[in-house]
Length: 269
Ligand SMILES: Cc1cc2nc3c(=O)[nH]c(=O)nc-3n(C[C@H](O)[C@H](O)[C@H](O)COP(=O)(O)OP(=O)(O)OC[C@H]3O[C@@H](n4cnc5c(N)ncnc54)[C@H](O)[C@@H]3O)c2cc1C
Ligand code: FES
Image 1 (cartoon, rainbow, N blue to C red):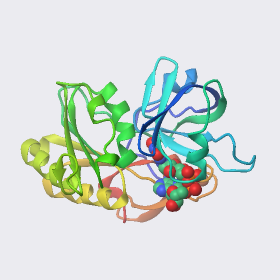
Image 2 (image 1 turned 180 degrees about the vertical axis):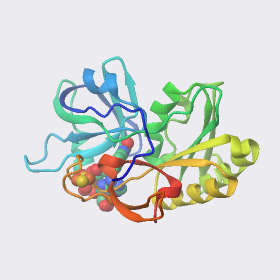
Image 3 (image 1 turned 45 degrees about the vertical axis):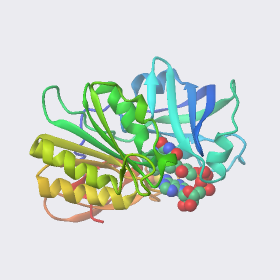
């Protein structure tokens, strides 16, 4: 039996009908969708996600998973990038349309307690989405946002000012520091040392690097894995990941159900 390390998060989810309140382009291929979903918006925790049945696709089409970008009152927000036909169809929904949304799903990030460790969130591309929600629940911290170019740096201005420090890195130097976001992380870890707790969401290469740095600085890192999902409820095993249990044994877990957040030291890459 796998004992999840993330505790205290309500796991009840529903297949809710969400009404589109607005859909607008953010920049480039990125869109912000606002939906009226009272149950999901009222019960979701940062780091959880929803599984959306995208209108305009055939009835048998799979749902698509998206992190929760924000929840305010009855309103749920999703920040997404158009990468294929599902996300393209989602960008074409109109105000007043209704969609089926299963959620909130997954375990989410364990929140740091008050006056405890300094949270340092590391985001790659649309991996910034769960940290926008996280920052609405955690009074202060650091968020480091990385991307290939300035067009991949999203929402840097939407973190609570004076309370959240925002660092930006782009590979081509078009915004912020030139280089990988993990260089900014190294600087942050030199400042906060073992008094930091890390959270990361983005491509696997970035997640692995964050995990290694956490180990060398003696910090805990919580990584949100991005796996292709089919059912989203633990039934199909499309999303399995190998992890190491405390007794040293290796086993497969379902990212959609037992994750998507795992402690870096558990993951077998
Ligand atoms: C837990 C979780 C949270 C996510 N949160 C967000 C989010 O907040 N915003 C966002 O834009 N996207 C997010 N994604 C990724 C999103 O689900 C995919 O981009 C989307 O399902 C692609 O659907 P599509 O039909 O447009 O693309 P497809 O036509 O299915 O695929 C187009 C391309 O995208 C790739 N792709 C498909 N699914 C994924 C995936 N899960 N990860 C990486 N590449 C993928 C395919 O390999 C292909 O190259 C998340 C994924 C997971 C598992
Ligand atoms: S997506 Fe089906 S088990 Fe995870």
